[in-house]
Length: 532
Image (tube, rainbow, N blue to C red; front, side, top):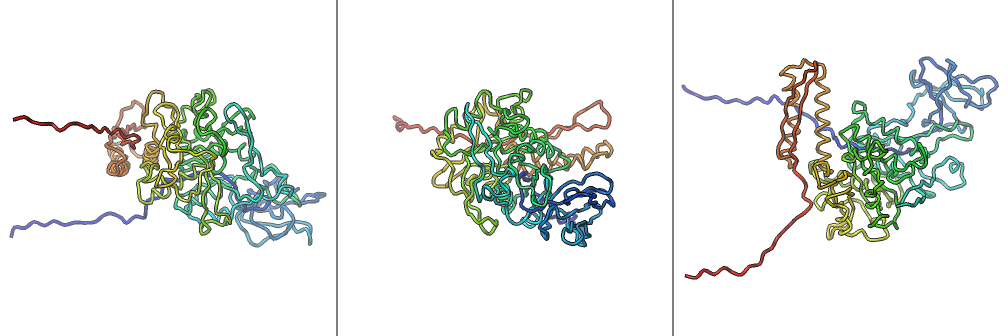
């Protein structure tokens, strides 16, 4: 009997939900640690030298000084209290009442992380590493106040320089809130708890309190560290709650303005697969238009975004950066935060990332987080501006030439909405692909995929099979972008080279641009009459 048999075999493997690429770097502080000493040498034990009156004189058995650090031991009132050998996983405490010397401690607990970015994909991970509540700034005149927490950083406005306080008495540290709220909404955060190691632990000095000035001084080094693609995966580089545009730097010189903003742009551009979310300083009464506005400042002739890198600027890095405005008050839900207050003033990058978090739950992450479909900002209470940031003002920030910024404005009847999708590229004649933030985000994801695939194939034989394997690792992402209105098409081309052990490839992308203008013509005409 003639017959036709068609069978089907499923050889695919069940996979979990893809890991998010929308990882946000946030530097800040945590209220988790007490001072202690850290030893990292095998078999090293604490030694209390003869004649030393406090445990702060600790040295290791090798004769080298131990590194002061903080951990979560709170049993004893004297500091530094504990010595921990992180290599051998052993700990000792300094017994001032009994032996006046180091005594063994049976329970070992790893120190909380500090000065190292830690990836947190859930609130439980974040709380485990950085505690269940943010640091709260205490009263002036207390022991804490002498250690430089409540600071008045300088910032430039036009040709003048002003100061304002980032924190007032009783305020909660904002970067912790920034990170925790993003994680609560499903956005992974690479959080770095900065600890300033300039104070020697003593019996009266038990903590290294947060130093905002020291954070600004160290920020560029921190940014350099996360520029390494092999060490860290990150898509959005922020400065947390600490603005960098127009800040007068604490390092290297006090006359060097916005060096941290340049550092953010440089870090993103060096990676090539990230975008820097630059925030300006918070001044509610600032002009919203004209030379003294934020828009006027980014477009001034001496702006870092119009100044070449060779001259200390960030012009060449600008396609990898964006700037949102203004600061606003946001509601912090009690169920996702230990903060008692429900209203916090936060920079505009926080609003963008809140909107991103909501959008990517149902939308592709290469679509613009702007407009009423995806740009309505959740949990926002009010803009922190004295004057009204109107729709017309927001539109004026989005010209086809010059440097653009993205405003949050009230789009009736939808509410406070991100009204802009631009990078900080200085458009000299008109817009290009590098002008658009969502295009930058899409290309960044393609770069991440290409990097991951190439790394997995490193040191394989440079044959046709390798080329097919490389293409097959990238094509699914490109197909997804093509079917999801990110691309109209793409090409993957193999290049030629005379150099041994090198594969050359070119990925040509044909992006779909988010519309920014409608030009509609309505024509009125008399009815055409046909005479028989």
